[in-house]
Length: 110
Image 1 (cartoon, rainbow, N blue to C red):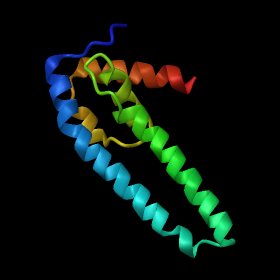
Image 2 (image 1 turned 180 degrees about the horizontal axis):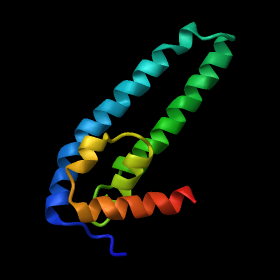
Image 3 (image 1 turned 90 degrees about the vertical axis):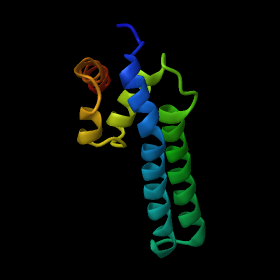
């Protein structure tokens, strides 16, 4: 499977990336704000927050770092599998790209 995507899909991905990144980060910040009210010692809360931020940072890197047309297909599939992209946003891509994303996600789900 070639990793290159159509120019129109690349342009759409570039339009969506700042929206998806901002939405994901807002969710992480909202979740982080709940840690001070969670049970446990301050240290336990800190460790849980540290885990959240580390996991979130890995997800951000997986989807948004080093954007290139040759890596966009895998990044889009990661955004879908991590729940960062809505079904409506995914539907804005070509049928070919959607089929390829589903194939990648299907491989990862096995």
